Image 1 (cartoon, rainbow, N blue to C red):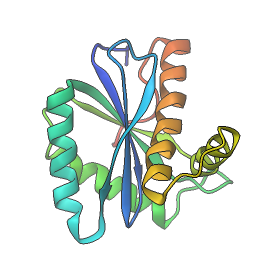
Image 2 (tube, rainbow, N blue to C red):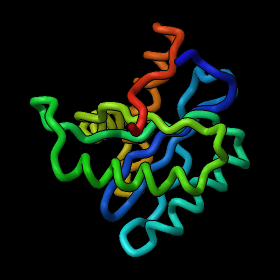
Image 3 (cartoon, one colour):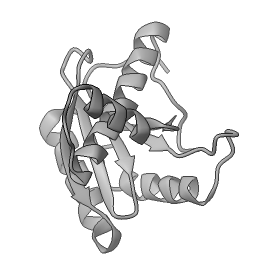
Image 4 (cartoon, helix red, strand yellow):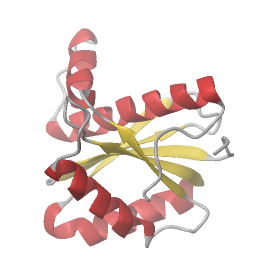
Amino acid sequence: MTVNEGRRLAIDYGDVRIGIAVSDNSRLVASPLETLLNGDNSYEAQKRIGEICKEMEVSVIYIGLPLQLSGAEGASALKVRTFANQLATHLPKEVFIRLIDERLTTTSAHKSAREGGRKLSKLQIDQYAAVAILEGALHAESNSGAIAGSSLA
């Protein structure tokens, strides 16, 4: 699938919190956006993500898929797939959802914060994990000329 116009949004899905990052219009810079509470509020979180997509003219959502170090999918990956399929019902049909390997993105977010001399809250860590997912996807798009990751099907 070739790269299309519009911003990119990345999601670091967790049972308790969902970190969100967004790209600029040129798809060169990934920035932390917000952290949503999950759990009993999953429907509200999905609805909010749909609103963000409309407000910011997002055309592709990258959701981190937590693969095991071996590359296999476990219970966490199944939760992400379920969330992604439910999220699709809250989005305009022109928004694509792509799953992208997120191994070690939270570790990367912690390391980046330490190198910058910052102490991040749990809410910020989730956003920076989403930034790491988005940066990887934007880099892959730039190199290949195609949307990164895999489709839901």
